[in-house]
Image 1 (tube, rainbow, N blue to C red):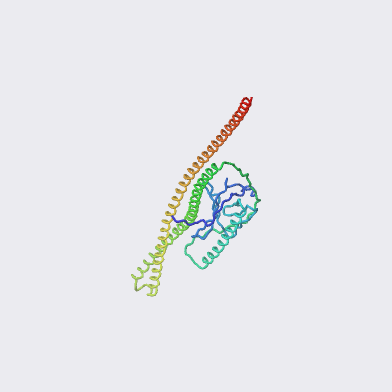
Image 2 (cartoon, rainbow, N blue to C red):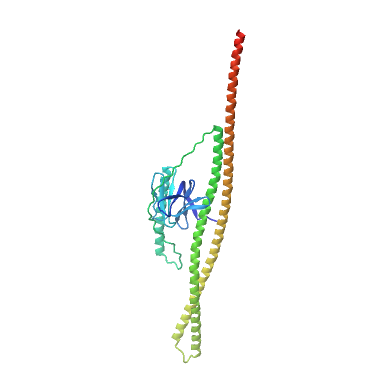
Length: 357
């Protein structure tokens, strides 16, 4: 299955959402720093900010030209999303990461504006017989909430050189496993969002098409009745040739009959096209089921990775405890040897004195 959205920029940050009750306080959306990525949908020419924490998406924000990313401190920024009816906040580790994210947000916003202007120009020049209208962007003007700084103490653990090498290699291996799971999870989540959008649009189109089919069926029945009536009238006129209308009236009736038959053929073709769209809907539904199944498999894999991480942490903790016990035992033996050496030194001095006497 081909991917419609591709990541174009990624960074790590702490994610917050505004409290819906007070509209002033921040609520942490993730316990730790998570990956926040810009995605580009080539088919729809749209940009989206997506971040996945655990098994759910904590950010799914479609970029619109009237959005604004505001730096409220040296390491914190925010933007309002009226589609999601919330305000997102990001806390970065460095000021440089905040600056890079803000610049990329500005570039994506400008690209979205240009794409929308081109799309509007094309829509004004084209006249499609059947179109699916996308919902217009809502206003993104929300009151900027206050900034809440979150600073936590950094714990430092002093270890020997050999223990540090073992611990760092184990951490690198754990980070690699988690990063592989996070990348797959983000890609599958993006595919699922795209399928859900396509599914919703196709369902709306099918509802509208079904309503049009019912109306066309009624029109077809009326046209068929009118055609039969005209045919009967023409037959009756031909049977009473001497008392019927002129040849000009017969030509007009024949022309009207041909126009009605052509209209019937056109309506039949439209019904056939709508029925073919139903098969496309079933294919999209199957793809969505496959994406959900793959997401469930990924969740199971993440559970297994978490279990392996916990086992590795337990092994590291037990190794550190064993090392501390060994160091304590060595220190105790050294102290005992110091006492024994001191006693032997006293004994040697005593023997020297005895010999000298």
